Length: 130
Image (cartoon, rainbow, N blue to C red):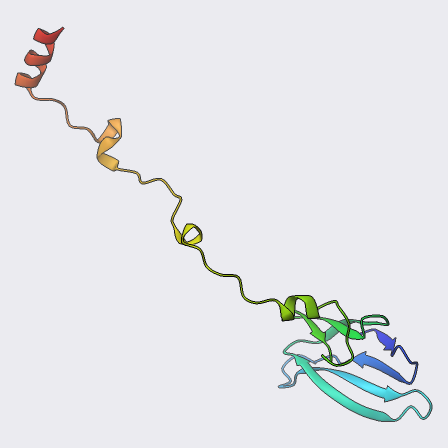
């Protein structure tokens, strides 16, 4: 996994790898740069942490994992923009047009291969009309 520095250059973060058949979760581990001591580990995903990005302006950590998931870690007080736009949005109102089925109804008896041949009487009547 990647190793990324915090915007203030006081911490370094790296992702952990999970070995096969181990009941563990992928974590982001934080270390102090001056002493290289372990500060904290944050559990993130069922899979290994493959890629990290600590955006300096947004103050958000974006994490890509081996289980095909992307996680964004943020603090509502210190983060700016970014993922906060989608978190702050109200859920979209459901309109009736969105729930209607737009597929066509297929009536199998309307198809030529399923039509019954007209009776002899109907054929005579049709011939008289012509």
